[in-house]
Image (cartoon, helix red, strand yellow):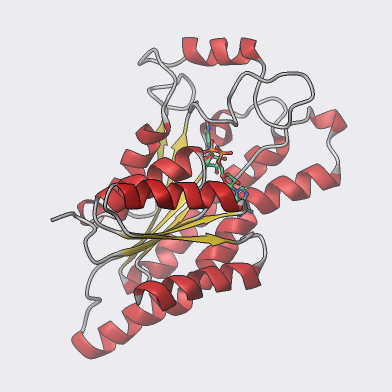
Length: 269
Ligand SMILES: NC(=O)c1ccc[n+]([C@@H]2O[C@H](COP(=O)([O-])OP(=O)(O)OC[C@H]3O[C@@H](n4cnc5c(N)ncnc54)[C@H](O)[C@@H]3O)[C@@H](O)[C@H]2O)c1
């Protein structure tokens, strides 16, 4: 018996890094997992890993910046698995630039990738999650179970981070909309929370080489490690464990909060 048996979950950006670890973790807890990514191969690889462990998953390639794509994603989850109980809005990315050199193109891209993805995926989930709860309330006086929405902020939004005006604008907004959604959706037994990862080993934080899109300077990696109380960088599983808690009945009375998962990082505990 897993604590997410009979639950259907969507994880956006589930093809790599934290999203892949989260997809695997939710599947181990018993959920049927719809692994979304903008990239086909990584999404399929995550599904293969889940199936190899005996879990159930479906890959859906979609760019959830687009509402029509987000609706296709949530629709496929329900078509394939019959319901939608959990949405993990994990998709996100960086395009760092010091503020004086920032362009509208880089600003909009990062706002879209980190905030509009969560906005559209959550909006597209409403007909399936909010309406299902509403029906249950009309029939039985209460929803059958709590449904869960998790968003992904960042410790950068709590501390500020040079070169990340665009990213911290998006991730800060995630903290605010988490509170608003929690207040709107609480009446339907939908918990809305966020995780704020600290420094986690993925392609976003790998030591950056000249000309590469992702990563950060090696000196910044060393500095980050020195600021972490637990003395190590995070692994994707460290975030997945907390997200799994927020998706489970163990967190049924937790809503509207953003949990820093940082190893005790100074300035962004
Ligand atoms: N790695 C860290 O230290 C760290 C720290 C704080 C927050 N985060 C956040 O955690 C989340 C996951 O980051 P990660 O480090 O695992 O990154 P990653 O690049 O390893 O994985 C992100 C995945 O999201 C997918 N994706 C991006 N845009 C998408 C879109 N529009 N639609 C669907 N899929 C999309 C990518 O293809 C990729 O597979 C992001 O929201 C990131 O901002 C990461």
